[in-house]
Length: 199
Image (cartoon, rainbow, N blue to C red):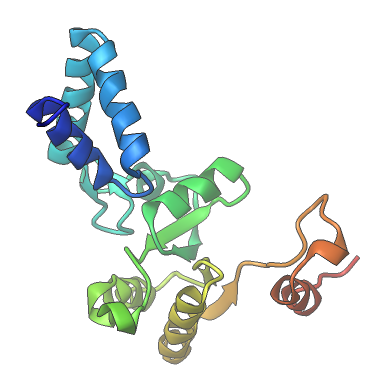
């Protein structure tokens, strides 16, 4: 005999479909929803519905937006000669939070992963090339994640962009501030040495 109501079981099941949410976390979320007031629960449901109805990808850079172009693409104070390429909108948000980059972005909406069936056609690579061909772009900065797929995607893009006469760079990697050399892995040390800068 079921010990939990069908509605609660259904809610738990939906929460487990969210990334990073296991059964225990899903149950905690479901019981939290049961404890909050009805107006709070309704506000959460309306926020989810609003996101699904109103948020889309920017026509230019594929960041999330509620209009045709995102706020970054509309910002006339941005450096329009540089485009930083990232995998997902959340990567863009992390970089924006740092507050040091003032150029434009391009979101690929993924990374090349042949084993998962994700090829160049599933990404926004052609749109990036079109932006470069339109002129005015002096530098493309690869900001893909430092993973096998992310590095493979960056290499693929750099080969395509080589024909478009634009400077291609990548984000520096290596030892983070406050860390100790003995705890750094081989890849971090290699990136730190090859990406060194004048003192």
